[in-house]
Length: 305
Image 1 (cartoon, rainbow, N blue to C red):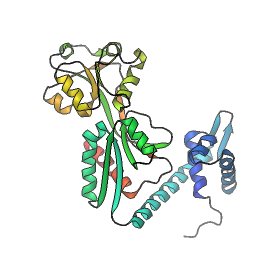
Image 2: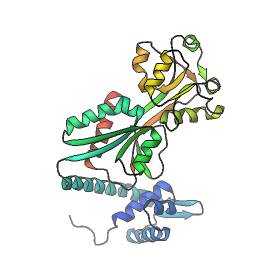
Image 3: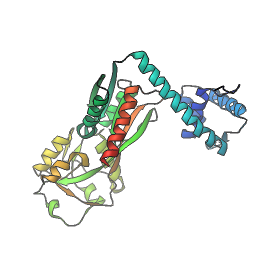
C-alpha cells in the first residue's frame, strides 16, 4: 500500500475528535494543552488538506459540518487503531511481565471486580495486579493524580479530565429489616416520603450517596441521616437489626433478600438507576493489560445479562 502524497497528521485528527465531542475549540485546546490559536491553525490546515469545510464556527461554539461528521467517523477509527498499536508496542517494549494498577469504588470492588480480575488472571497469569478500594470521589482523584491507570466507579459523572466508558448497570434499592413497618406496607414509597425519612446511608463522596441525593433533589434532598457508614456491610448489619431504612446498591443485597434478612421496599417516581463506569485519564493510551481487563468486563457483563 502506498499512501497519498498529502495526509493529515494524527494530532490534527485527534483534535478534530475533541472539537466534535466538546463543541469548542477552546475546550479542545485545554484538553490537549495547546493554545486556541494553535488548534484553530491546525483545523484550518486540516480543512485545506481535505479540501473540505469540516467545522462551522458560530458565536455559541463550533460544530461539525456534514462532511466533518463523515471525516470524524473515519478519524475515530484511525486514531483508535493507532492507539491500540502503540499500546501493543509499549507492551512488547516492557517485556512479558506487566503490571496493572486499578482503583475501584467499594461497591464495584465488593461485588463485581473480584470476578473480573480472576478472569483476567486466568487469561493472563503473568500480569501483576495492584488494587486500591475507596469511595468514588477518592478513586477519581487517584486516576487524575496518575496513581492508578484504570478506575471503576458508580454514580458520579467523571470530570472532563477523565475518559469514561459505561460497563454495567446498577440501581439502588430501599431496604428495611423484617420488623420495620415498611416491610408490611402494600403501597410504594414516594420520593416525598423517602426525602422526609432519616435513612442509613453511605458516606458523602460515595457513588451511592451521590445517586441518592440527586434522585431526591426534586423533594429537597435527603433528611439528616440516621447513620452514615463507609461500607455496605455495615449498612446491611444495621438494617438487619431494624435500626432503620437504608438505600443501598442492589448488587449488595441479593443474598440478604433471598434469605429474607432484609426486605426490599418498592418505590414510586424515584430514579435510583446508575451506571458502573471505567475511567482513565484523557490523552492516556491504555496499556495492553488495561485494555484486556475492559474486554474481560464486557464479556462478563454480557454473559450475566
